[in-house]
Structure formats: C-alpha cells, structure tokens
Image 1 (cartoon, rainbow, N blue to C red):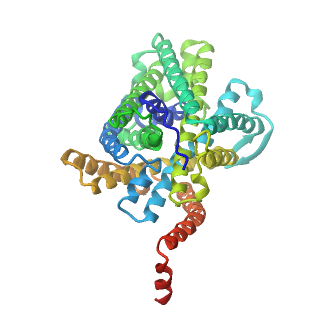
Image 2 (image 1 turned 120 degrees about the vertical axis):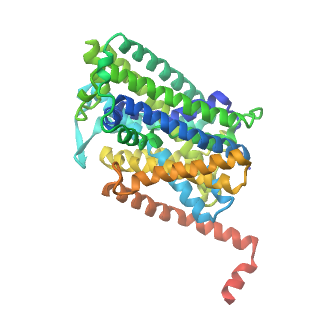
Image 3 (image 1 turned 60 degrees about the vertical axis):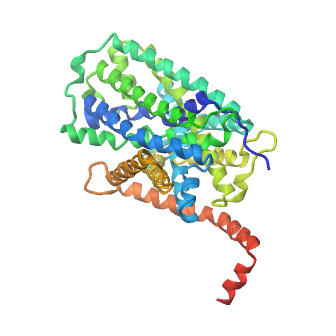
Length: 460
C-alpha cells in the first residue's frame, strides 16, 4: 500500500497551521471586530480566547503524538465512540477547513475589484443581494486550479508554498503596521469599549474560534512528518501557531485603531481597514501594500486549508466513513490525489454561491471548530491521562461547550440566525447522502471478516 510522503518538519507544521488560521478575514471583518468590542475589548477578547486555547492545544499535542492519523478528531473519537459519532465529528471539522477555500477564492475577486474597479462588471446573477461577477469567478478559478495542481503533485511543493507565503505575509504586516505608527493618535483608541466592558469582550470572544482556529490542523499532516521529526514537536508547532496568531491580531487591531477613530469605520465600506490607512497617510501606496498583504494571505490560507481538508477527506475515505475511493494515494506523488481533486472541484462549485451563500456557512464553521476541539478533549479524557492532562481536557470541554452555547442559545447576543440553522441542516443532510457509499463498504468488509454475522442476523 502506498503511504503519504514523509517530508514535513517543524517550520512546515507552523507555516501550514498558521496558514489555516490566518487568511483574509482580518481585512474583511476588522470593522466588525472593533464594533463588537472597541480596541481594548477586542484585544482582551482575543487574549482571553488565545489563553483558553492553549490547554486545548496541549491536549492536541498529546493526541497527535499518540494517534498520528490524518483523520484527526474523527480518528480520536473512533477510539472510544461508534462510527456514526466519528463520521459526524469528521464531517463538521471538514466544513471548517473546506469552506475557507471558496471563501478565499471569492476574496480574490473582491480585492482585485477594489484595486481595479473594471473587474466589477459582467454581473452573472445575484444571491441574497450580493452580485456574482464573471471576472471574480474566473479569477477564483485561476487560483483554484494551480493550487489544486500544486497539491496534487506533492506535499513538499505545498509546504514550500506555505512557508514562502507565511513569512512574506508576516513581513508585509510589520511594514504596514510601522507605516501606520508614524501617523494617527492614541486618542483614536477612545472609547476603549463599544459596550459595557464584559459584553464587549464576550462579543469579540465569540468569533475567536473562527479567527484563531487552525492550530489543530497539525494533526491532519501527522502522517507526513519527516522520519527524524520528534513527537514533542507537534505541541511546539501548535503553541507557536496560537501565540503568533494572537500577536498578529494584537498588531493589526492596534494599528487600525491607532490610525483612525475606530467608530468611523463603516461596515458599508468594502475594506474599512484600507480606507482608514489611506486617509491617515494621505497616500494610495499604503492601500496597495495592504491589499498585497491580503493577496499573499489569501494564497497562504487557500493552500493550507486545501491540504488540511484533503487529508481529512482522504482519511475518512480510508476509514469507509465516506466514499472509499477518496482514500486513494497516488503511487508516484504520494498524495491523496482523489481527495485533492475533490476539494478543488467542490471549491469551484461552492464559489458560485457567492458571499450570500458562504457567510452563514462560515458562522457554522466557527461552531464546527469548537465541536472539533470538544471532541478532541472528550477523547483525550477517555484515555485517562495524568492529572495535568485530565485537567486540561476538562477545561477544554468547559470552554468549548461555552463556545457552542453562545452561538446556539437565542438569548445570547451574536447567536445563530435562521440562515445559520438552515446552512447547518443542509450540511447535515449532504453528509448523510455522501456517507452512504462508505457505510455500504464498511458493512461489506464487516461481512467478509465475519461471514457468520449475516446468517445470525437473518435467523433473528
């Protein structure tokens, strides 16, 4: 049996996990973050969220080392729970990774259209009031196809692209933050909170699972670790990703709030962050720099999420939780080629939904991340670890339960609307339909291993 190539080192794990974590969302939703919490509320909300994620990262560090399986949470859950629970967990986790791909593909059109307005033409149709432009779709395809090809060719090419884009992006962020530091005023930070302090922090904390999710993707590449990679390196990569992600949001939130009064950021503007910097510096070059940063982040996130989602899809196919053909490994490239192509084709199709179709599903994706972390903590708790591990797992279960509750309980601000519940129901039905071939294959293999089971069942 052909196995996945073993090429990844610590820097690769960090670059890919950070790529899953940080895409273009920081540019698109920065105004929403500040409106939710104000500058200090946003900083405290992210800090609280990141600190709460570290124990969960500790749990993942031990799980990935003990069960180095690309199925990640689906594999951990399968050790202690029925296949149906393993499938439901894996299917929800797959949503959180996969949806980033069409989201970033669409973001490419928005960013390019902002720099070159002539691309915002040839409207194909509208969904939910959002237009879908032909040039945007073509640009998304122009990114989707090469990235699918890169990841079809091998993990080394995908990891190399991840390192280049991640470190280029971080350099660009430092440059535009330093440029903004020469303008603006500390007075722009006031008022420090958008609501009462606790409410402000809570409203920002709600979106942290979406914006800081990605550290757990380390487990999806566990089977591709270099032979000399030490097991303890998994937790190092996870902790480094969480801390770097927190530092990144500290810098961006502070820089945006410093250059302009945060209450002046209007949600009806397409990219309020770029507008704020352009007004503060009275120069267009800063907009180009910010958009260049966003484009690099776009490729970074698209590439990393394609790798993570394809590995998860592959591993679920291998376990007969989905169509078994998805578990195929290319004999030469040593990549899950069928799963990579499936993610590429599905991305191209999902792009046609436009922003109106993806936005409510992205909200579900935030909860999917919390569900994944909850499943991991529950699985690790079942392994009966030592005291520190047990406390980390219990803490993780409490935190992730709270993360889910604040989105599904109607009386809490920021809860799911009707659109999110519909998106969740559609995803569940789609999962049940896709699971059928895998379930048939699993039952067939079960009969082959135990031919007496069918006759006993028939007599009953």
